[in-house]
Amino acid sequence: MDDDGGAAMPRWIDLALTIIMALAAVGTAWAGFQSAKWSGFQAIAFADAGAARTESAKASTDAGQDRLTDTVAYTSWLEALQREIVAGTSPRPQGDYAPNPDEVSGFLYERFRPEFKPAFDAWIATHPLIDPAAPATPFDMPEYVLESDARAAELVSRAEAFTQEAHEFNQRSDNYVFMAVILALALFFAGVAGRARTRRSQHFLAIASAVVFVGAAVVLLALPKTF
Image 1 (cartoon, rainbow, N blue to C red):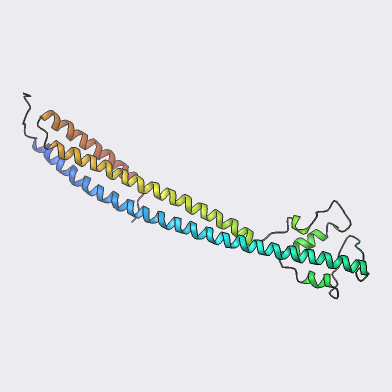
Image 2: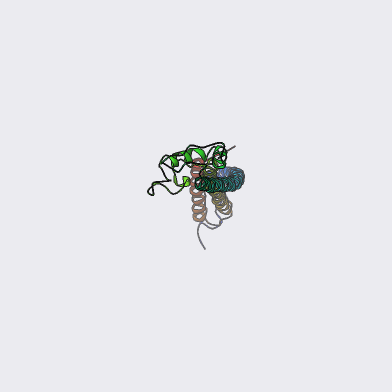
């Protein structure tokens, strides 16, 4: 039979374990609170990411409709100008274009969308009607920029940022859950130490409980916090 069998635990160790158990219980509650808060932030971030993606899809649809409108307007203008040139009502191209409001081509030109007209004018300045090296269409010009396209790209970037933020919040929540498990381990060691039959076991479990608790407390203090 072990000489230490049935030895009573020293009072200072018992007091230390009681303090550790109390603080570990508080730490576990704190970890649970923080985990719930970060999980809430994660849900909000994912919702924001979904909303941004929805808005991005709408902006992309608007860009497609604007591009289609510009394409139809351009092809209609080109067909009208060709008919006018053949009919002799519009002058043959000499490297530039002067819209005639009395002709269909001029009527269409005046009704180009504001985003399309600068690209069209820049394209005309390259003398595309006589210069085969000029860009094929106004849509090849750097001036052709759709605000809805830019907005769609911005919203996609925002959605990706929200998603990344949500993953970070999720990791913080997981970290707090893990620390709650570690604190539960410290509670377990402290509880078992009081029931150990030998002084050696008591000391070992008390030290294990203290080491685990201190390590968990240090990590808890270092983790990001929210209120």
